Image 1: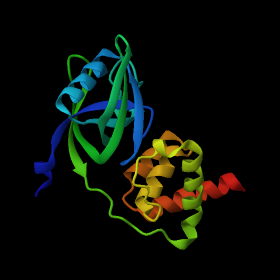
Image 2: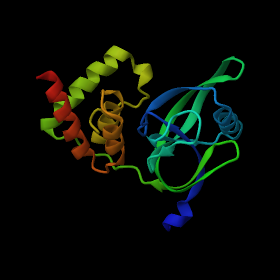
Image 3: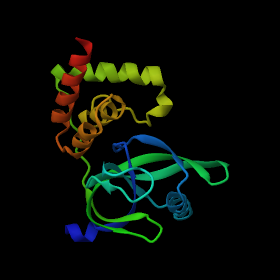
Image 4: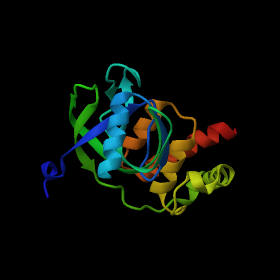
Length: 198
């Protein structure tokens, strides 16, 4: 199958955050273009893409996103007050933006290619510290914030979950999302954790 065959159009939601595959992201939606986007996604059971902002703001003129983002699906929603939607999303696969266009509403639509999922990878013994710290974080925050299955022996899953919760700069999180080497990602995170502990 060639890459063009996997190319799809995806509504984009640029945010000052990075979402990692397998993660959960609650969102509060109030701008009309995104309220419409979410209503359509709920009606069609279709995904949209979350990308970190490279230039610009979350509100107002369309922001310029980083070229790699994550496809998400809505798992739950509520409208506690008129015009404001609260949604829960579950992150799926990464994608790379090949082209964007701005709809009249200001919504950004991306022509995107799928990025294949990283293969499961064992965790080297010298990086076990990261696993222990993640276990503590999940116990403290509650398992509800971390969708099952919890695969503590998989460097991809552990690296993604730590990348989500650690206080890293947006650009660092984006670099971690873009990496395709789960053990290298774990090494970076373990070094960060060691610096915090010392």
